[in-house]
Amino acid sequence: MIVWITGANGFIGRHLAHELAGVGHVVHGIGHGALDATEARRLGLQSSINGEIDGANLNALAAAHGLPTHIFHLAGGSSVGVSIERPFEDFSRTVASTARLLEWLRGSAPNCAVIATSSAAVYGADHFGPIAETATPAPMSPYGQHKFMMEQLCRSYAQSFGIRCTIVRLFSVYGPNLRKQLLWDICSRLQAKEQLLTLGGTGIEIRDWTDVRDVARLLARIAEPPSPQASFRVINGGSGRGTSVSDIAASLIRRWGSNTKVRHSGVSRPGDPASLLADDAMLRQIGFKWRIPLDQGLADYVTWFKEQAS
Image 1 (cartoon, rainbow, N blue to C red):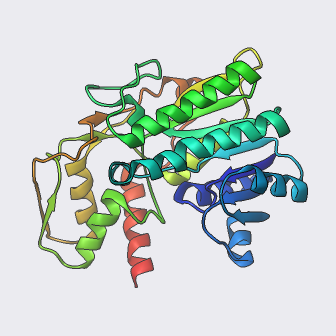
Image 2: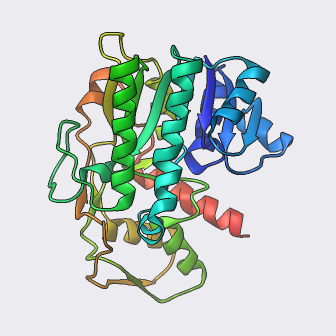
Image 3: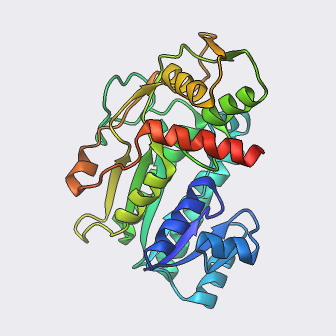
């Protein structure tokens, strides 16, 4: 495959580039964030453009390296909080970038397959237990709304113009190099030797935690497009196993070797559902298996955090 990754310099993009290059694919990147030649080679990228996902940069990449067979569209907003503080910025990063990419594909590479990462945030609240892909989306935040708008754009271009699109709704992705969100926050405060961690919410919120290294394998696995008779599909990128926020915090503290205590404020953030757990039936149908148990993944994260902080 000749692969382009939008958002190649992001958390998931870096792991995906390494995974795809490792199995022999030619990989190029585009998106915000400069990469020097040494770092790009380490990640497995043969080239990288630091800039917007727009016609000019896409044309430049095609002129230099030929048209792609597959595009992994990872670029977009990545924070519920930021989407609430700066909703237009999140819209531009997620929706407008997707519209520009799809329109370029329609005119320049209509046979290219698109694998676009969305989020379980499109499902919204009031789900208890596994959520199937057929559940009615009801996003609670601008972040979730914009991810769903991105999905709808992909569906529209698939139905109207035959662009083959696979949407992967990712759940709670964590792992080495994640420098934000719950795990980063807890480890940062453990490093600062805080004796009492006050976390938001109740602690019983359920999330479906998946290691980014497994997520990269999953995306590579489902890169083959759907049949021409089914040019659009949606797949849950979750394990089907739920773990509470309080259990995640306790495991990190134990792995750290700390006696820090945890309390929860009982106040949930806007746009933060009580439960997001994947129905993984479609992944089981294609034979995909998650390899990294949560305990191992959290241990690896603590090891990485301590190493990068030293």
